[in-house]
Image 1: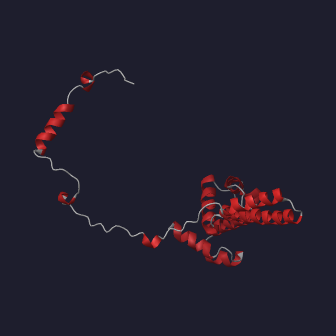
Image 2: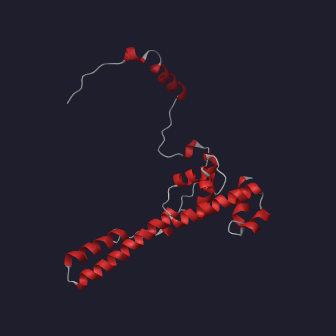
Image 3: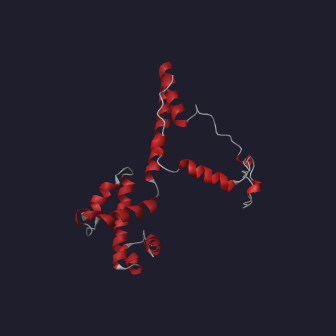
Length: 193
């Protein structure tokens, strides 16, 4: 049921308020408005902490919307994350791109000025962020063939298992060995070097 409501709200998420209101209940439309606000906040500042958004939701965004409980706020944040995906990962990739581009520019400037140390430092950064110093993973996954295992209840199919003659007698011996007060049978030894 919750998944149906999520899909219903998501399908009209970016429609104008009047059109969305026609397809949603007033409660669903309020949720949609909160989600849109949170998405806008995340798009403006991808690294904005969820805690800040939760605080804003519980206060009603300073009077813009009606306040909600913390539980509802966390549910709204979970729905927003589901809609927009992991923005932090995209932001991290963007920063990585900026670092590499900056290092390329730094290398170019260092080369024009004949600065060998600057060129080496820029190349070091490029190598670090492109992982050029690590070997490529050229494993041929096509050669990895899963085992063809057929389940069986026959213990005779097991390999390297020795048959125990008089199994029941051996079980009784082992039970008798460990019956009783184990502390009285313990032997104290001195350690040897």
